[in-house]
Length: 112
Length: 113
Image (tube, rainbow over all chains, first blue to last red; front, side):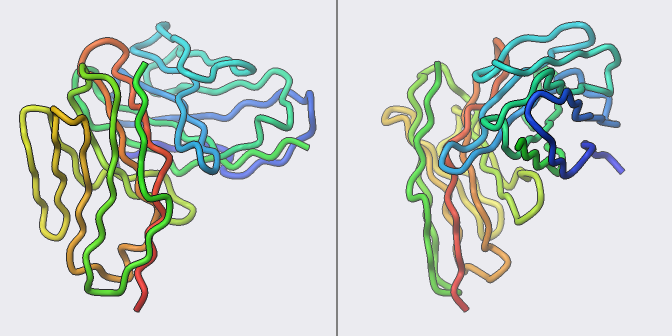
C-alpha cells in the first residue's frame, strides 16, 4: 500500500531532551516536507527536501533540523526541544513537478 | 510570500443542506489550489483541487470554484452527510520554485443530523 508513515505517533518529552521523528514513504517521491499544525494557524512548513541531500528551510525552521540521506526517509530532529514546539507534526511527500501531496498520519508531540 | 485566508473558522449545517468555505490568496503567481479534509486523528487527505486555467471543477457532491481576478476560491459541498464532518483546509502553491503549499487556517465543519 502506498503510504507515508511517521513514528512515533505520540510523544511526551521534557525540555532539552533531543528527539527524532521519523518519516518514510514508499512511493519513490523526490519531494518531502515537514509541517506543524497549531490551532488557528493551519499547517506551516518547517523544512522541505527536493531530493536526496537537498534540503531547505520553510516558514518556521527555528529549533528544527532535517536530513535526507535516502530518498524514502526524511527525519525531523529537535536537538533541544522547548515547550513552544508542542504541536501536531505532519510529514508529506510527492513527485517533483506533480501537484498532489500525500500526508502521513501525524505525530503529536508534547514538550514539558 | 503567499498568504491564504480561510473563512469561516467553524460552520454548522443541517444534514442535506449545502456548505460553502471560502479562501483568498495573495500571490498572483499561485496556480494550484487543493482542498484537504482532515478527520480526527488522521492526516490531511486531498479531496479536490483546481488549477488556474480552470474556473470550476466538480466531483460528485464536491465542487471548487476559482476566481483568478479576485484571487479567491471556494469549496462547495452539496447534500451534506454526517461523514462530511471534519476540518477542511484550503491551500495554494506555484508549480515552479519550492513547490510549497501555503495553507489556510482551517474550517471545522459540523453536520447536524
